Amino acid sequence: MAEGKKARIRVRTVNGTYVGDFVIPPMRNRVSDVLNEEQRQFINLTDVTINDKERADFVSLNKNLIESITQM
Image (cartoon, rainbow, N blue to C red; front, side, top):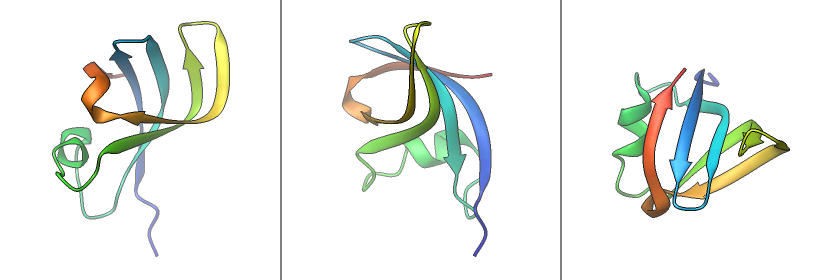
């Protein structure tokens, strides 16, 4: 099974800024394709930097808290 492709993104939420790797599934082409899926309430990031100082291997963010997303 194909893994999809990784995109490095910056996510700004009401609580902070997260920079991490986002996996775009094989049947999608863009980050926005995944974000627009109604059944998906959370997005998952790996290798994450939080507020430019804290590090985490994995973070799951509720889409309702997202203010902006930038692909890097």
